[in-house]
Structures are given as C-alpha cells and as structure tokens.
Image (cartoon, rainbow, N blue to C red; front, side, top):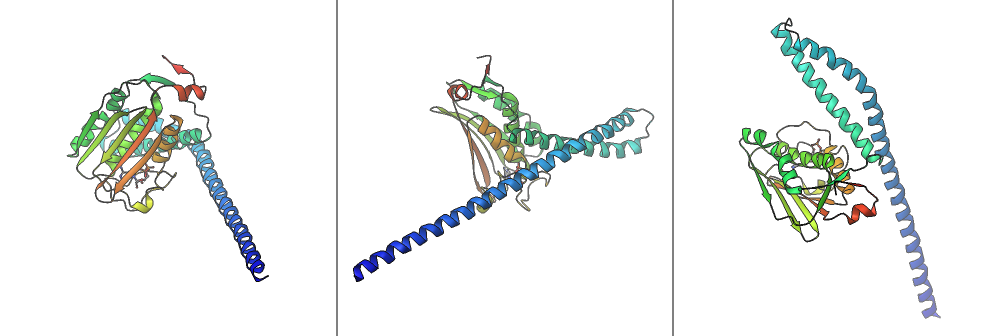
Length: 277
Ligand code: ADP
C-alpha cells in the first residue's frame, strides 16, 4: 500500500506541477500580449500625432524658406532663420519616419521587388557616407565577394536598411573604420556592416531592435536619434525573408549581419510581383 501511496503522491505532484506550469505560461502569455498591445498603442499614438504635425510643419517651412531666400533679409536674421529651418526639417524627417514605420507595421507596405546587382547597389548606398566618414578622420572599406545568384530586393527598402546601418556605424563611433561586406554563402546573401565604435552592452543586444529603444549614454558621436531605425530595419529585412543579427563588444565595436535568400522562390510563394525579371 505504501508503494501505491508513494506512486499516487508522485502523480499528484506531477499534476500539480503541470498545472502551475500552465498557470505560469498563461501569465507569461498575458504579459507578452499586454506588452505587445502597449507597443501597438504607442505606435498608433505616435502615428496620429505625426499626422497632426505634418500640416503645421509644412506651413512653418514655407515662409521660413521664403525669408531665407529673400535678398532683403538681413544676414543676422538669416542665421537665426537658418537654425529654425534646419530644426523644422529635422522634425519633418522624424515625423515622416514615424509615419513610415507605422505603415510598415500595419503591413500596408508592399515591396516592389526587382533583380539588382546587390553588391553595386550596396556599395553605392554605403558610399554616400564616404565623405562624412573621411572628414571625421575615419575610413570606409567595402568588400565585394563574387555573387552568382539572382538577388531581388525592393530598392527603396534596401536603401533604408543600408543607410540606417551605415549611419549607425558612423554615429556610434569616434574613430577607426567601417567595413561593409557583401558575400554569397551558398543560397544566402550575407551583408554585414561593422564598426570599431562604442559597442553595445551584452544585456541590451536583444533590445536594440525594439522600437524606441536606445542604449543610455552610449557615448557615440551624436546623441540624436529616435530608437526607431533598427526596429524599421528589422521589419524591412523580414519583408525580404531575411534575418538580421548583431555581435558587439563595448569599447570594441559592433557587427550587424543580414542574411537573405538568393533567387525568387520565396517571393513567388508570397505572390509578390516582380519587376524587370
Ligand atoms: P537611434 O540610432 O535613432 O537611437 P536605432 O534603432 O537605430 O535608433 O538604434 C537603437 C540603439 O542601438 C541606439 O540608440 C544605440 O544605442 C544602439 N546602436 C545601434 N547601432 C549601433 C552601433 N553600430 N554601435 C553601437 N550602438 C548602436
């Protein structure tokens, strides 16, 4: 009998444990759902506000530009107007980024994929930063491997992806070099952007892709930013059926690597129409 008793209490224990496991899982699920809802509400809120900001910003920019272009404006005022103008432009850029991000999130952004020379395209995009990088005493290197497969991207989205990664590499470095590397690895294209900058603490590596997340006192070149760039990059890479990951060491630098499939099978499966195939 004792044997049975032991057995039953073991079973009872097991059942109790599973119930509490289920309970914990359920709590966790609720928490994740609540967090996702808060996140969504945050984006909707920013998106609504951004819409409201758009018109007044346009109405602010037009007369500023008129006064700046007016030969009768005295030079001292021009300097002040120029500051106002640059900041209004910055705000307009932020507002547009927020609106674009909420469009991507809502799944309302469809790709227009076309076959590209991915190495040349990526090199062109990264090179737009060359003069700024060199003026700051840093170096930009671009390594292009042999690409034999057909690669399809949405050119506007790819531009956003590369510009965001290279501008971050520059923004969060004080010196050293930025390397952009494009290679084919079997059926995958790998594009990495590495820097010798401030790096990212290990416990925050998975958070930097969250929207609005920024590493505090990261000590980069400039503290400007919204924390939206990488969240957007991640979404855009996902639309290309790709993945993005980061490796980093504080004080040594960071490497962001994108992998995406060669060919168009994955796009056909999504019923995405291709341009100039
Ligand atoms: P933003 O640059 O506007 O803050 P991002 O979403 O592009 O927003 O980046 C989120 C955060 O990740 C940044 O605030 C920064 O702390 C960190 N980060 C991004 N890229 C790098 C990098 N190359 N080196 C160091 N930290 C980076």
